[in-house]
Image 1 (cartoon, rainbow, N blue to C red):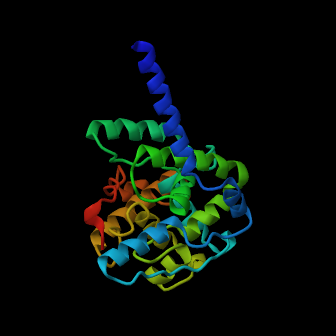
Image 2 (image 1 turned 120 degrees about the vertical axis):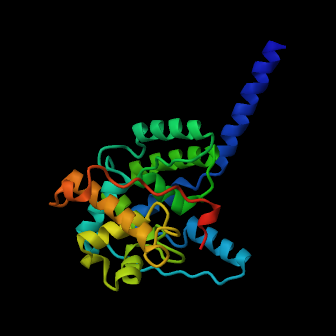
Length: 255
């Protein structure tokens, strides 16, 4: 009976592994990202489906810009707030993952994210916002391909052009024009911090929906930028500690 139990467990593990691999995008599709901009992403398709169910027309605002046309302030703000070890890791930040797992176990649910910029990009391009072990495993495998096939500069360029920045707004150029009426190349430190602060929950952290929540997130990013040495600002004036991060997105966060 023990041998049969072990054999059954091995069969189930093998079947699950096949299921995980079957849901991966083709490796060639990942390689083409090194020279070609993606079309409609999985996140865009998800939002379109959600809008259809809600009986409203889906919006899509996106203007692709090269990384040379993106403000260095925004690049610094995003790295400071989303992935401080971006240039040093190979796609996965194991310390952040360990911390995330510990907090998830304490709350008995997938409550806290620990995703790198590469992981967030893969999720946006190929998967969805569903929080599950299967998605995380698939995400980790594709992240490995991404880091092998693309440079860090290209990964960051893709990320800044495809992530969600509010309902129907994708990429930093559309976000900068929507929020500040200017190109992404012209963003100031404060404006860049505001956009970076929206990334964890762009449908909830938005200057038009909650100025106070937006200001709190912006202040947090400015604090992180100053600590990282990207801006010359007295941390004392920003507070001894950064404002806490806003809660992870949930069903109540829909617009």
